[in-house]
Length: 331
Ligand code: UT7
Image (cartoon, rainbow, N blue to C red; front, side, top):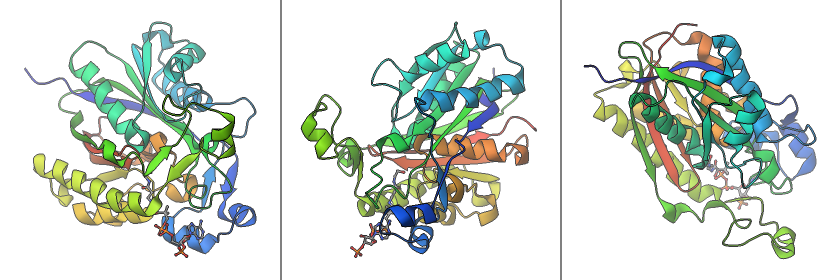
């Protein structure tokens, strides 16, 4: 009997309307459009400005797009996995809040935190639920309201991040379509190069942690860059070799959108032309767990049944990984 594969059968996305452009940032901090563009490839990012709105408020419209497109009753959803580093609250899980807001009364759900690799981790976990036959319809959503943890006076981080959500529906794939393989990695020794210094049980919130701005993203960009360039390219190459793939076999690379130079290094290593790389970093910046599903969302109309897609990410933790997917439908 053939192995059951988990296929992505629909994609939804959401980005807030408000744009924060490089020229806006030029007025806020000591930077230039030229510096940001050449160092990162970013021109603008989206910011969730609606008062009282949180990550779940971006995840909900992304998932509702899937429900509409698939004519799916939310009661049919078995499970919601939410990848995020910016949950609505420390607890309960944002997945539960999302379930309530969309009326997925029969679903269980949980949050998964693997920073920029969160979507790939969540996709792999969700796929196992389908492959095992235990569940039929799993929603995986990557969402981050990065603007809620960014210090807009810190020019080394505020130029990079943006807000957004991307979601996929996983179901058993026909024939051999769906997730073929994934390699996920982590190394906790990287935790001090990209993290939030306070707010957890190690250093609970206090007047002092707020005053010293320890509830914002801290990143040693140069250090992370070095590991990201090799990490993302190495794991993509490893996955391709394991599956006997060359650049000619790959139709699309859907990379995490952290820095155009990191994407370019991965593209070069796996040997594919630029036109096969999904890039939207110029419009959305780094939306952490949302980057890869937002790429799939934007490219959905161009994807054809049977297309071989490599997804790759690197992020805080450190966490990194790559997944090999055979696209399951024509739109
Ligand atoms: O998604 C999760 C994983 N994260 C990543 O993958 C991000 C990895 N890191 C990066 O993408 C890059 O390191 C950054 C985009 C964050 C920074 O680019 P860089 O080329 O590594 O710059 P740098 O940190 O080496 O800084 C070079 C110079 C410094 O000035 P000096 O010391 O050479 O005088 C910085 O102070 O650029 C300065 N600088 C800026 N200048 C203008 C730093 N930020 C800015 C800025 N505008 N926004």
